[in-house]
Image 1 (tube, rainbow, N blue to C red):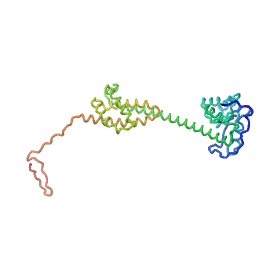
Image 2 (image 1 turned 60 degrees about the horizontal axis):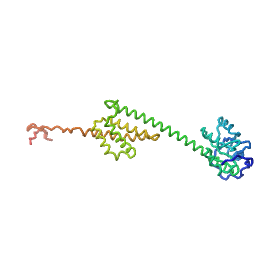
Image 3 (image 1 turned 90 degrees about the vertical axis):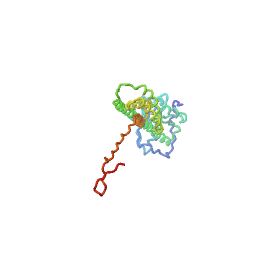
Image 4 (image 1 turned 120 degrees about the horizontal axis):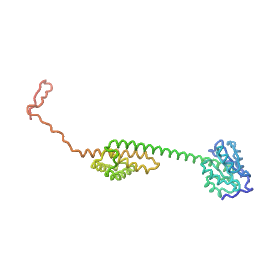
Length: 323
């Protein structure tokens, strides 16, 4: 647990050379140091400024109220927040930042060891913890780089989530527009557009909805016999093609409502294949119900009235004798 910082906590961190400098560090950093009267955390700023490859622009404020005012005025790449219950409560400050929607990287500075305080700091929303007694210059640079990288990944994930949500909304609008166009087309082909689904169609709706759900999962290859049987039932009930299309749209709309933000446009495209197969089978069922009309009998020629045939090469016409 983070304890109040006392005067002995101002010891200088261990001075060690940096063996491996993080490559992901930027060339320029704007850092806001939020400290107490003892300037806890200023040593870390000095270590960062000592790196010739890094340009550090540092501002220092005392207390969280002054920090909030400064954050409303300027944007910073990193916050170093000293934890002192009597002057600066870093955990409460970071929680307030996250609730307000601020995503600037935060490292909390304190006198306790990292093993004692890291869990609380991360739970509050900070990217890490720096102990003034155990954090070496090399560890400092790596923790700063990790804090910047972690916050960048979170922002990218948030943007990606927003893009997916926006794309899902566009797809939902496109599906609704497609439904309306198809329903208008189907209603224009029926005798009474205001007539609800007949009792027969209401009964077959559940059957077709189950077939449609299976088709969306497995494809229509294994459903040919079921679709053919359903088309026969529709034909026996004198269901028009427009009514069959309304049956399809009603079942599909009920299924799409349960998709949520998933790709309903893809589902509609696959469902159209089943609707096409249903209409083809329905037309075949109607054609099979039509009486078979035999071709008219051909009247034979009476003897002596057969058409004349010209013998090749003779130039004369001969009459074929009746058999």
